[in-house]
Image 1 (spheres, rainbow, N blue to C red):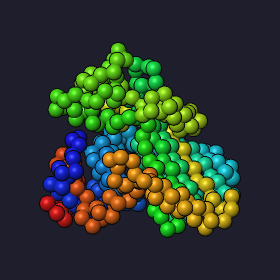
Image 2: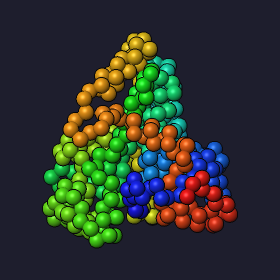
Image 3: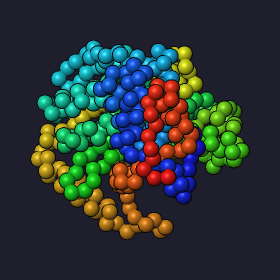
Length: 362
């Protein structure tokens, strides 16, 4: 997949979110996915596109369809709660659609938090779940704090190692506010998306020093050698430690696969992934008045936004602020699709007899 500059993005065709959601839903339904599950899966993708997280948007439709077709994801499986306490639960996703298991797990965590102040639900036997913020933002609707963790296939070398062992394990936290936009933190633990290295290799370009290492563990600027080696964690040893901890919580604690034992989404089309996730919700009411909490969050945001920007910086931004702004623009002007993604979706539409949609612009 190519990466486009802001200038390039303006030249892309833009599609309405509702139309794109309906198209993807209908493709999945024709594939045999129940409509409710198909709509949820499609919604997670389109919402990622709306927020500018295109790497987790409709570009994933092709691989999701392929893994369902190969029986690696069971669209008819119903996730099962196998352990349950007032505050904690463990779910076996049974290799169901990752988004379906994750959404249900987050809703259960929210239910527990509303009842006793906090809820934590671990998931094993799952699949790729899309953008983590989709689930933490569910908690915002109930004035709760949402937390989501997931492990991922091994593409990253732990600090000091030369071989991949851990994934780009993501973490998201969403915190409600009053006047201000909520704080929504969502990040992977690698220093750079592996897709950017793939693009550099395709173009024959070098990559910045510090992105990746070769098979001998040497820092490399050669994109092809980097793909044979491993990407590096953000923040050196600190990022590596965070990625390892996420894998322990999401993989080892839940009983899911971990490290190199996780099935790769794209490169392993013979085995199921057995991913692990952890979802948590915290009710600020358990600590005090909810309005006071949100007002104090607003106060912090006001104070941070009021700080003088550093040299060369136009504005001090909070986590999630860029995504909220992007969402406003894309709801109005449409979602830009790269030609490769557009062609992939058109091919799926042709295969499943679902008419392609007309662009809003372009």
